[in-house]
Image (tube, rainbow, N blue to C red):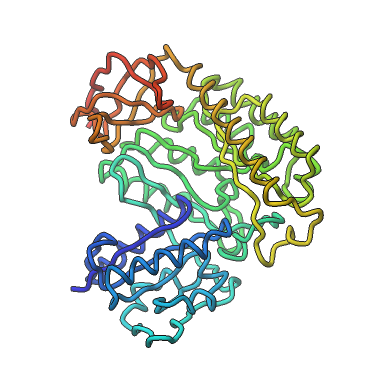
Length: 444
């Protein structure tokens, strides 16, 4: 029996797809092992969001060769779709699979042979227009939490983004199929599902036609017994409707945690980015969430250093975020991506200026998170504890409904259980301490 190992770079969506590909390989008789257990086959699922994709991919290939010089190395994922020939020429790479081919991995593997020394690997990379099929996926690496893919691809022409070039047009699963998958996941004892995709608010497009909506999906999932929590991983502000916010506020299982990409707090920069909203709409969405769910956690994606972002326009973003009642920021420093519209926009922001702006927003994010945590001290909450124990301290961690990370003394009975706690204080590491932790009633 051949042994196969997987390594995943990038987002929750990639992790859900890697897990599904691994199960497909196991069904074909392969044994899944850890990366360092001298597998016969290394599968590397790549990301293309930043310009570090090449460096990361090369490093992992080198490590694979150290572990097993005779091992077969296949590269797939977004970077593989965008730069197939370049990747095939990395020493040690034997095969490159594009977006339309990666879910044929188990079928194709018996046809592959190791590339001769000094020769490029085999490339199977169809035009992105051929990536029209939808492949359902979900992760099962963690019994506590599963990433469930509900949508793939994107029709938005954002100036800085390569995702439409790497994943193709927007397409979705059906409500019935997603609900069926949620029941399968619940049967495995998973307590929380995170809905993921490229643009999940665009859910409902099947074969180019929209028959269902994201609101219909979450209403159906709210009735799935056995799953205690659903999280919405990320949703565009123009697709996060008042109806969706109102539903989450009164739902049985969807938690008060939203991650809403902003990218810039300047309308001028949003225009250059070709985003489909202005900052006023974003502020309205945040206000609506806070009005219905005062303790909701709101995360924000923001890009600094996009071409055309002057000092004045960056200050607009900084001031907008300072005044916005959000909980944390995910800060991305703009990097040039080939074949995107942004590379032609002037003026280009110097690298040292991008770095300084990034530093400023990271500091602001720390302040935002600290203020949000301080607002939660004294509240009662339910924590889903994870099988992630710090051996040095003997402490375990988990998350509240609204995404506050809590630490408590280790108790094996708490793992994968919802436990009522009182949030008492923020420790020196910036995590929430919980007093008088009591065991939740077992509902299984």
